Length: 283
Image 1 (spheres, helix red, strand yellow):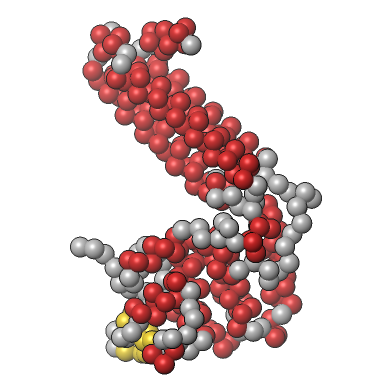
Image 2 (cartoon, rainbow, N blue to C red):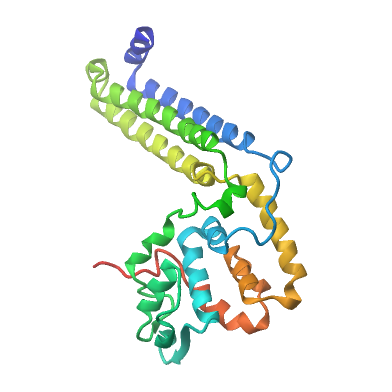
């Protein structure tokens, strides 16, 4: 370990920057490959039946908070809990207060209370909708068919966390505690090393986190893909006799075009919702 420290200390800041960028690139590419290649396959895990997974969970997997809010809005519309009002300013929604005591999900209740007076369907939505961005289904037994084991999820998180910490710790030590970096090189070289290496590390870390989001959430991506394909086949087979509950699945997986004609008006309303851009600003 001491020998490695001496080698790093002897490196010119720009040489260190080159090695750090190369190491960061190789490590994160390796992490992504390892995680993707060790995902469970459909040969190892049975695929859940089409309508066994809650549509709200599928909506979150598909488009996180945006998917959840779109699904909640669709449900309020199809149950007639909110009414469509056409005004000069565009489409507005207004809650039917006779349904105020009915059971609703958390997000549906937030939206129902928000539309207590006529308001635009996708503008200035309440900031309390941040709850829609969280995973609330990790302990739901209905979702276990799409879940990784706790061991696999922990391994995925460690595969990213450990090398990330080592990379940034090495850069921090070279920047803050290696006196040779300032004595034997210009301040400009030292700054270039710190800024470029740090930004490159941050960029690849964010890219890796984005590509492995579902893996870190404990979701079996290969099983999810096979399940969605199976669900689409079931939706096509049930297109002629689609119930309200089955229609929720079309919205949940982002295939609202599969909805029957009676839902077309709702489709145009919900597709304009986009979290966090539809949420009201604090300023």
